[in-house]
Image (tube, rainbow, N blue to C red):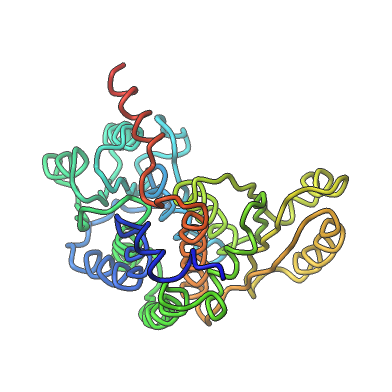
Length: 351
């Protein structure tokens, strides 16, 4: 009998508590929301027409997830900047969220400084570091979240604080009912996917076992499924220490489908979906899967759960987080350390 994902085996390998952090996503999201609600609202410059999230890695993904909630709902454009330079279409009428969990991400600090030089309004979301100092010294709002976690494990704090603050500024509509549904659903899913639940009753463990030793391909439909797919990829990269190919409908039907329909490969396809997808996109998913499935070792569709967009978004996020966690444990790997990133940062600091 395979005992690698049994509760005792899981916790003996996960010595730094990544599983507990994933399990506590509902609590972190609640705390993040409280932080955003408590901060005094900024008096916005008239005519703000864009919101830009400045960040990298596990901090920047909060911007992608927030943007996916409002793609077709707001006249306000939300963009994410992962670079040392601000694009020229951002300026004074942009509200900037500088998001760096550590507070010391060099790319984020650089573009935050550029935003201030342009005369833009900035909100910092961080646990401390240079970004917190810059906010205090420059007098712009500081959403200070709890320290002590890996940035990717602090998503609930960062996302919750930023989105609740956007609500307070009335940049997005009131989401009270969506928050409550999301907390309730996440608590249920965290229990269902947790290490205490055996693989036979645990969809996250079952999916990890199906993916073991296979190349991982993630397709997603537009909107919250696509944003969730980015989170799945980065969590698989950092927690599982594995690569994952990610692509999006309908664009993938104009290129990626060709590469996957010519020869048998050791790959498993995951397709992330949401009930609001376009009917033609739904048809494309069915036809594309039928064409390429004979060349794969397996395929599974994962539909978001819940009623509101916020709940459906996080139903996908939490499954991906647990999946990446169990994939690490199946390899006998501690999911927390990211040694290559540590080495790179050290070498950059020496230049």
